[in-house]
Length: 88
Image 1 (cartoon, helix red, strand yellow):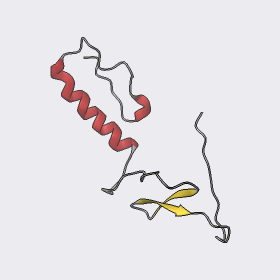
Image 2 (spheres, helix red, strand yellow; image 1 turned 120 degrees about the vertical axis):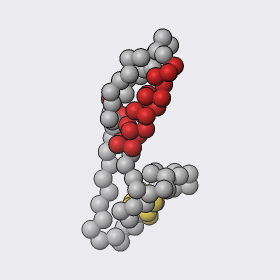
Image 3 (tube, one colour; image 1 turned 90 degrees about the horizontal axis):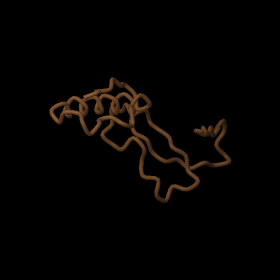
Image 4 (cartoon, helix red, strand yellow; image 1 turned 180 degrees about the vertical axis):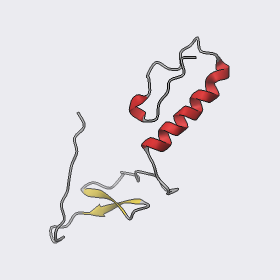
């Protein structure tokens, strides 16, 4: 198996594993994927890292340091700023 070496989601190779890779090495690949997911989406919470988006139009994602939740933007919030990132 051309077992890739990755620590982050962006390092994963789309073409691995290949059809010709030995099935016996599949457990190594699964362990590597678990490491990648834990590194890329770290959380000590058992809740979903990104909560359900259904019905959350116009809200923003916030955290209490452990769990993510949806908050409501109000014009009266002093010092409140909304930042957006656009991935290209």
